[in-house]
Length: 146
Image 1 (spheres, rainbow, N blue to C red):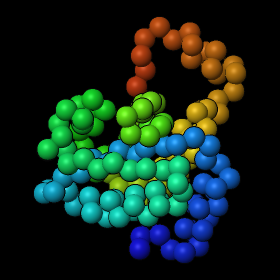
Image 2 (image 1 turned 60 degrees about the vertical axis):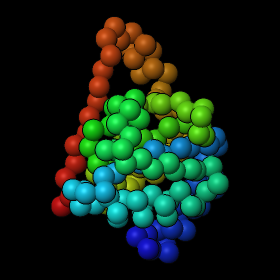
Image 3 (image 1 turned 180 degrees about the horizontal axis):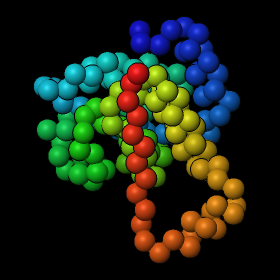
Image 4 (image 1 turned 180 degrees about the vertical axis):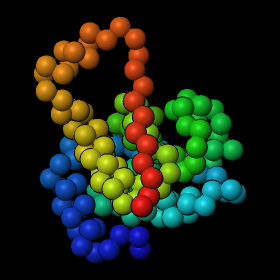
C-alpha cells in the first residue's frame, strides 16, 4: 500500500462528506521509460477505491495517442481529473504530470473534491474578472520533490 491507514481514513472521510457528483480520473502511463508509472498507478487505484463516486481509466500513452492528444497529455505519468463517468465526461482542464505524492497528493485530493462539486470555490468578484478575459489563459504550477 502507498497510503498508510491514517491517511486512507482521512481521505475516505473527506470523500464521504465532500464528493457530490461522479469523477473520472484518466491515467496516462508508459510501459517503458517511466520510472514512477507503476507507483502512480497503485496510488491512484488506492485513492479511487475510497469512493464509489470515483472511477479510473488507464491509457498507455504510446498505444492511445489520440486520447492523449484529446486531453493534451504529453508526459507520463499524466492525470486528468474530469467530471462524470465514461462516455459523458466534462473536462475542466485539470492536469497533473508526475506522481502526485507529498504536497501534490493534497492538491490532487482538493482537485477531485472541487470537480465533484462542479465549483471552483472562487468568490464572485474573481469570477467576474475571469469572465472579462479576452484570450485563453494557461496556468501551470511546477513543483519539485524535496
